[in-house]
Image 1 (tube, rainbow, N blue to C red):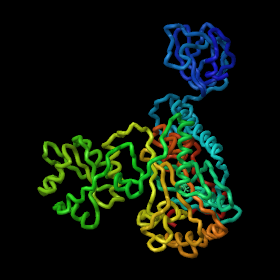
Image 2: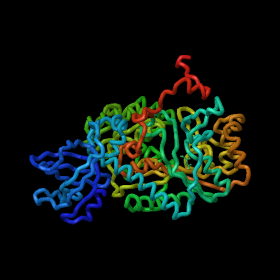
Image 3: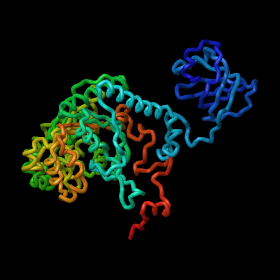
Image 4: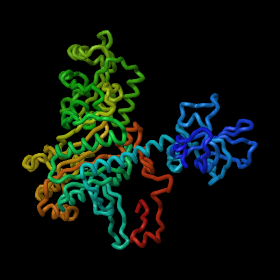
Length: 567
Ligand code: ASP
């Protein structure tokens, strides 16, 4: 019997074989009180020492008891707690299994190092907050399956030992023993396979898919994550977006008991960057960035002059509050950590302007800055892509959400087809995304727009999708413009271009990050807290010690040899 079922008992009812973990033990002279906890709830057990309970119980022993369900003495009632009005007077006790001394207590708030929690994740998951996280994740899966059935979307699976799907990360590789010297890649996403389903004639597809991306420790990313992956035939972005809105609305209502408003707002990438400095804007905050480049058109401040002369901009945010030096220094050090050269600021108080650069302002500039009124003007100078991330951070630090909406969704679309990442040209989504206009792409690929749309929730990218290329010639052209040689195209994507060549329907799709969704809904600081067995920031699993050294003899079977680093 589980503890939750006791709610149907009446005072004096017999209880048999109630099982659970010893949560805490309190000795009170002739009586011992034990909180018994199972997955569903907890209840107080009372042991009368005059009875035959000579077994010494310890925390996390798994026990089974028989006894009577009784109303607690009025003075002992704890009505704040489920079943806090009752207790079990124990008649028989059986210890099913003992527990070693715990590495940390099974309590809601613990300060244990995350590595230790991950090493003993099975114990960490016994803690109530983790149980809530994982059960919310589980409810999310259930709701996904319900809404997919309701919308008649087919669950189809795709292989995980594959060639390679470029999604902008490195692949995890799996050596093939039967084909020595060759490797499979684990999918960065099921992208090409889901498109193949459309080529095969399936009207739609979904999968709760595991994806693997070997990225250099990016903040709050996991090497292995889970996404709701979808594809629709004969579809365009607006069909996909309205399907996604229905799906998200259903999940929020069914799994999280929360009504969200649809349709979601839409922003273009350009507007999003100009107004918020990011393509993942948090729209619960009203304030937007202000372009103050004009104010400094004739500036004597050398670094601003240099930046403006080389086509840079100066953008800032004005808050009515006078930030303290400590607040300013803290923002300054945080954005420096993100890569900024430092925070520019002016305080405006009684029409006086202060700040490290105040002395260098000419009268015209002073006048313009005074117009902002009492408060603090914080700014960054450079190119929008670089300074945007710092301004986004500043915006989210100095302003609190003003909207009542807990969940603010927005579509961001009209992304540039290509972007430069660390000096290299990359598709801003993936190379299977259709250009908005094929002719424009042919003429000026660098400045072309992609039919790519992102869904952003509270400043977090929840998902991405696109209209796909369905013409082999355009697919080849995109790969060429990306910089691949004919041989590379043939070797990596020849089979896919071939597959596109047999009457491929128009198709489009989307993927929603499930870990991110659950973390956002539960307001968890990290996706690690909503993944049952996550890896550490450096990709390790402290529980099993993966990844692990493989014996050289075994490696030989795979035709692989260790080499020392300097060889
Ligand atoms: N394959 C994409 C991703 O995993 C999603 C999509 O375009 O459908 O981000």
